[in-house]
Image 1: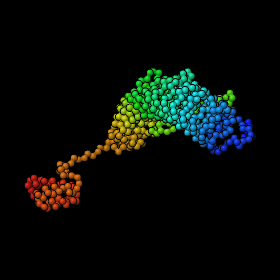
Image 2: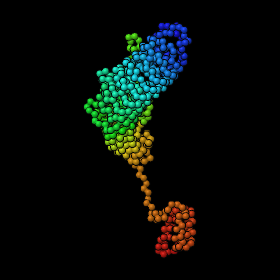
Image 3: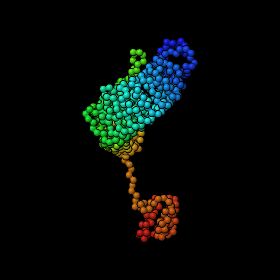
Length: 518
């Protein structure tokens, strides 16, 4: 394969349907010295042996193959000290996390089967800008040096493993931090959030979901001038969220998920988002991303655009988003113990696309200002104590694809001739006072009142069996002879209830006045 390619410096064969089997023992010629080697999605079953002799290799892409086994130790040897970019993601690698050569700037080994703890030697990678260990089976506590081992680190993704213990407590000083994104979701981390995270002034994207963090709401994160995405759902955060100070207003926050925690008191929507209008007007969708700079050729810089990704709940469904749009805006404080009214201030957040305040103790009416959120796609206010009517203004929300106000105390008609009538009855059930739309309870249709039973029926309209009237037969027979008893028995047997009641009433009257059946 390489007989006539001695001067080849770059080989990029990624994203093909090739099946490559590359073994050094089959070669008796000089192997070209690559600087860039891209073999992603080439159906490789193992590591090409010749890689250990690539002394000038700077860029190595082996992602999306079927490579199974442990990572060779030579990945961290001096022979690969020129390596700056390594992507071995989405394979079937197992064993402990390999520590690459110290000059690596981009290290991607997510979506594999790695186990064991992360060695503190990871902090020897002083040039690292991007580290993604997500979606493996790594466990144990995190090395505390992860907090400040690299001033240049921009992306740290440790999500979907089995890490426990606390987050690293020391983060670099604000003037030196370049951290843009941190994701530690779907682990077993606990304790309080390190207050030194406030030093990460470049931080834009923070995901803490599905851990065991036990702390109050981090109002101090509101000082971060670029923070856009904050997911804290499915943890053990607790207590009342107080009013932030003047400089704690989350000016760029577009996504806030507090669901499934133990927050109490009123949800201080206005104070958290004061000054944040969520005024997003993008002609073409762009995505939240970090720009990573990696040296590939001598003296030249190659930039890598790495989009932020996360598993988030949208429209009631949790799913993985490989890219997240800049204009995806959401507020999800559901499944807590928030109380009080939903503030009219929510109508100021014009770019909102998703609101989920379900499963709380909210009271009062639905704010009319929700009708001004023209971009709203999902609104869930179910399982609260809301009252009053559904505002007509909500019928103007033409993008609304999910709507749920079930299990409240709402009354009155569902706004007709609008999008709200397209949702099924489950969106409104549990509100006995609601009418119209998909509900069986139609507005303005008076129910026919039932006539109260007569005194005769009350006394003689017993449940149904003919033999329940034996005492009537006896009474009638005593007053007028055997013939009457036979007649009544025949009536009862044929179940002519109305006639029976009439006859018995006449008999009682005759007995009372001393008259005969004739």
